[in-house]
Length: 214
Ligand code: B16
Ligand code: MG
Image (cartoon, rainbow, N blue to C red; front, side, top):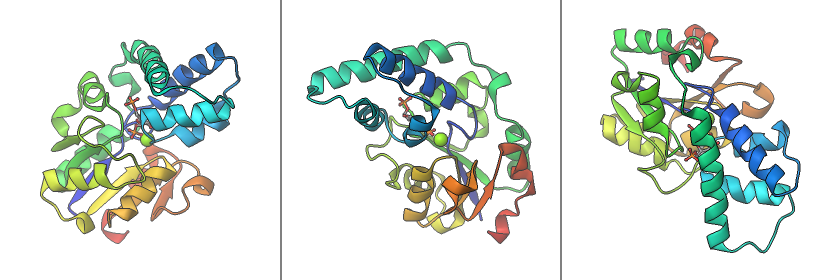
């Protein structure tokens, strides 16, 4: 194993809660209820695909492409406002230590996030300098479960996909990692992430994982 590719939202930082609150606000404005269970389907998927799922949840049909773009932009405005003040205190537990361990072991580090705000968030967290490659939603077209985001990260690192391990909190991301020929560690609920090569319930537990034994 020569590289670890990190998903951002739900792995490095808990921006998932802000995505959720922003979609919930939009749903309420559109007149329907959106809760944390519905939100599970949005993890790791792109903004426009998330909107499609949100509208489906509310049974809303017949919306033009232009209106969809306006709704997605409105949600993103709420999200950007919510994350405008995030700082190092929101880095998930155990992540700084895990990044240091990888550095010491000579393992490369990359970001593989669907979020168009990915690089900006890493910068706000003062983590961008620790990453050897940063791939976010601005660099790729195909959303997870397509492997494009992770394969692009491996290419930038110049490490073969088979020697990369992905860390993900979303089922779509685990599928994407495997589609790219990579190993995957799931963070969260084994019932949802059971297809990963290893699952830990929180980022603190990453320290327990033997990367070379996956
Ligand atoms: P944006 P990840 C993903 O980030 C989120 O999990 C997902 O909920 C979001 O819709 C997607 O980014 C796009 O984000 O609207 O900021 O471009 O988990 O791939 O780091
Ligand atoms: Mg995620």
